Image (cartoon, rainbow, N blue to C red; front, side, top):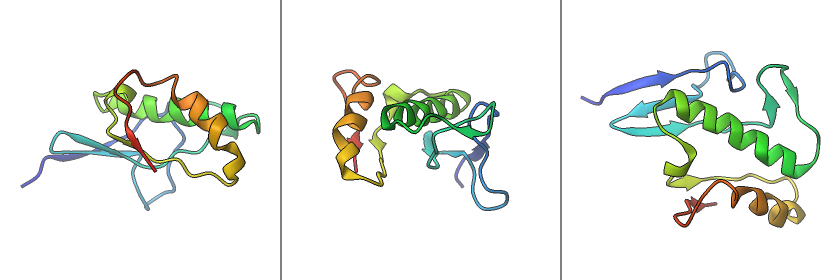
Length: 107
């Protein structure tokens, strides 16, 4: 049997009801759902700048990981979905602020 439990925090945007969890901890691993650049307190998407979007998404994921007993520096994989590939360099420039020498794999 696996040890599995739901992670939930009000410091990250809520998920769609009944469809998925913010994260699941299973067998010592934390599996996070995707995050949008929404401020959890206001329920609004932050400024349309891609760097601000990236910071907010990482903040949301960090808040979820904290409740799960982990943190962003322990991430093994980090997926980024962009609408416009012209935003790739700006997004990566923000991501590099959150990881030291051991960076997660990324798709």
